[in-house]
Image 1 (cartoon, rainbow, N blue to C red):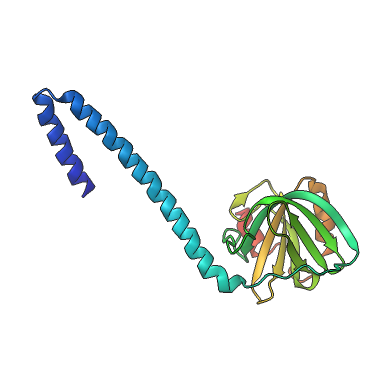
Image 2 (cartoon, rainbow, N blue to C red; image 1 turned 135 degrees about the vertical axis):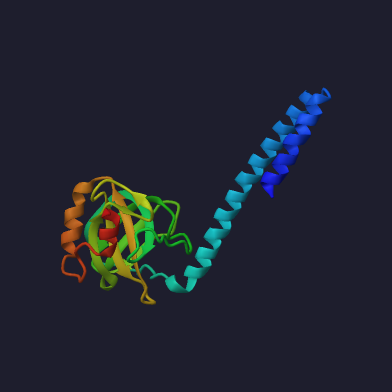
Length: 203
């Protein structure tokens, strides 16, 4: 349809130019091009917004309710370590970003290990509490949530939500020398090595 319309416009432009209306034709083409560009940009934005809404709706039951932060999480065992929270993904995919609520929002963060779990305190977003018994792996990755970093640039925590769904939450620490300590602290959990996400991120 569009090629046909363009063909008609080209023919009309040639005819108009023959009758001395070249300037008018140029202005019309310019206005039309700007209008088409604006429509294209708006269409892409609309598709992005609607696509994200559909994904969020589809994930609502899969993610469910997140754990609440206990009034007394116990003694601090590790941290606090500053960094950037990159997002969470549905395991084992490193690209299937969780969009429910604000858990997928990137934010400056402080990572702290307590006796009863791990707290990811985020600036400008809700904090994320990961109960210790929910952690199944802590490892380093190249990327998460569609973000590719340097090799072993991300500390990824794989854990199980209350409804049984397994997700990965990633933090890029300001000081990456802390990674071995975090990984070793949870080496006793099952799947503490590089899981499917790690393999996918390295490919």
